[in-house]
Structure formats: structure tokens, C-alpha cells
Length: 208
Image 1 (cartoon, rainbow, N blue to C red):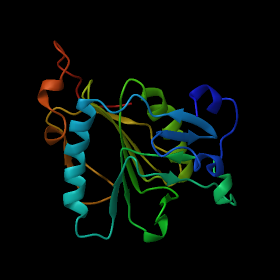
Image 2: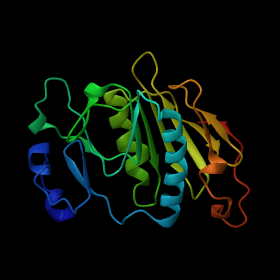
Image 3: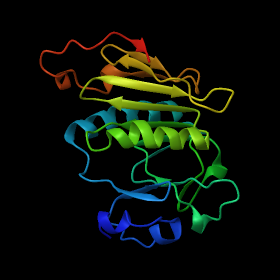
Image 4: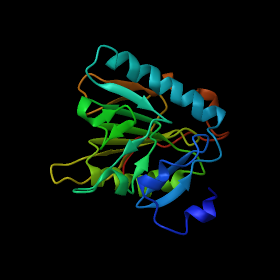
């Protein structure tokens, strides 16, 4: 399946599920996105640093930590599985309700999602996926930009919409996950100091 072919039509889960396993795709609003190129070395280093902390916190359950290529099928109200037009592979996701996953993957929204930004996925992670996760009720959504050493934090409000994203410098940052009291992510354990762009001092924590 080429990216050009996929872009010509609305893709549903019925078709998506027949695509070759060795191809990495997501569908958002029925539009297919190729997950290429593969993750960079920096992406993998940051992923491992974040995963280790989540795994240590949730090791005793009841919540489960899932990671790409694990898929989440996000059905809209009344939508049959075969008609789903939103299937995503978050870098990291936490799910606490066993009814929200089966042998094929996740069913509905995770409680907490972290996406690790790359240049090829920046717009998708910060715009399309943010809107998608908000629509499906993800309680907390973080976008980590390891090159710029920033994290963008969105939390679901009582109105069912995300708050304006708070933006933090990750240098020396220990950031609490509001959805899970007691869980604090130490970014010095996740983002190597050597990844700072040369000559950059990084911004101070700020809201935006």
C-alpha cells in the first residue's frame, strides 16, 4: 500500500487490518499516515528512559503500559469495529481498565499518552493527534520534543476538552503526572544532556 494510494480515500479498520504487518501506518479521521522513517537513535533513548519509569511505577498493576507498535482502535459512538477510522500507535500509553484492551490491541482511549516528537511527525502529534485524543477522552497527553528539550502537557478538563498546553523545559525537570498521583517523571533520566542543541540554553518553564 503506497502513501499516495492510501491518501485517495477514507480508510476504515476493515481495510487497515488487511495491510501487511511489516508496514507501519496510522489512520486519523480516515486518512492514512505512514510511520516512516523509523525512530531515530535519540527517539529510542528517550523512549527507553520514559518507559523504564512508567514500567517501574505500574509494575504491580492494575494499570498496563503499552508502546508502539501496539495499536489502539478508537471507535466513535455507535461505530462498528470494521467502520473505525481512527487507529493509532502511541509511543507510550497507560490503560487502567482491562475492558479497554483485547488480544488485538487497545479498545478506546488510553488514560495517559506520551508521544515523542520527530520532525516527520511534529504536525501530526501536536495538531491531529491532540485533537483526536481530546475527542476520545484521553485524560492527559504529553508531547516530548527531545531535540528542543521541551514537553507539552495537555490535560482533560471537566468540560471534556484539553486545557491549553503547558510548555516546560526538560532540563532538570521532575514533572508530576496529574492523572496518577505519586507518578513523577524525571526528564534527566530520559533525555540525554548531550542532545541539547549547540549554543541553546533552553527556555524556562512557561504556560502556553
